[in-house]
Amino acid sequence: MMADCVTLKSVIKKFINEQKMGVRLIKEKIMTTAKSAVAKYSLAVRVFHWVGALLILWAVVLINMGDDYIGLHKAVGASFLIWTLLRIITRFITKAPAPVPMPAWQTAVSHLTHLGLYVLMLAQPVSGLLMSMYGGRATSVFGLFEIPAMVSPDRDMARLFNEWHTGLIWTTLLVLIAAHVGAALYHQFVVKDNLISRMR
Image (tube, rainbow, N blue to C red; front, side):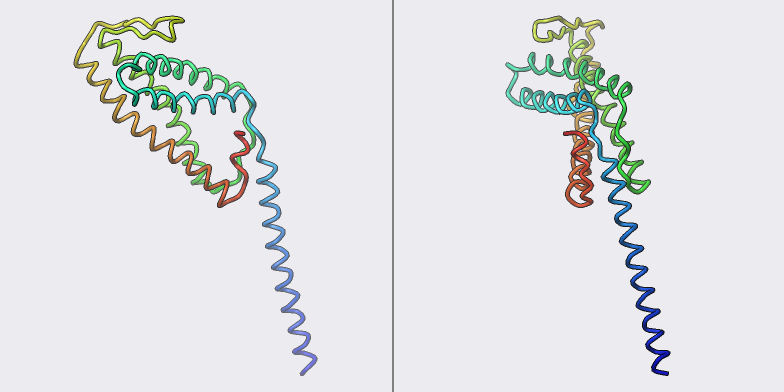
C-alpha cells in the first residue's frame, strides 16, 4: 500500500513538472517570437515619424504665441501636409517589420488607429488651407513658394473650415495621438515586448 502511494505521488509530481515545463516552453516561444518580430522600421520611415511629430508640436506652439505667428503657423502646417504625403508614399514602398504578436482585437484597434491618424494628419492641414483660401488669403511657405487662394472668398465656408480645423478634426487627432502614445508605452513597460525600439 505504501509503495502504491509513493508511486502515485511520483506520477503526480512528474505530471506537474511536465506541465510546468510545457508552460515555460510556451512562454519562451512567445517571447522569442516577440523578440524576433521587433525589427526597426526603415530609416526613412523613422525620420518621417519623428520629424512629423516635431512639426505638429511646432505648429501648436506657434498658434499659441499669438497672431504675429499665424503666417509661420500656416507655413508649418503646409509643410506638414507635404511631409505627411511623402510619409505615406514612403510607408507603402518600404518594407515594414513583422507585426508583434498580440490579440486579434488589439491588432484591429491598432490598424484603425493608424488609419485614423493618417486621415486626420491630412485633414488638419487641408482644413487650415481651405479656411485661408475661403478667407481670401494665400499661404506663403517660408517665402519659398505660395499656395494661392484657389476658391472665391466665402465667409461661411471659411468659418466652417475654421470650426473643423480648431474643433472636430484637431480634438479627434489629439485623442488618437494620446491612444497611440498610450498603447506604445503599454507595450514597452507592461507587455515589455520592446515595441518602441522599432521606431527608434
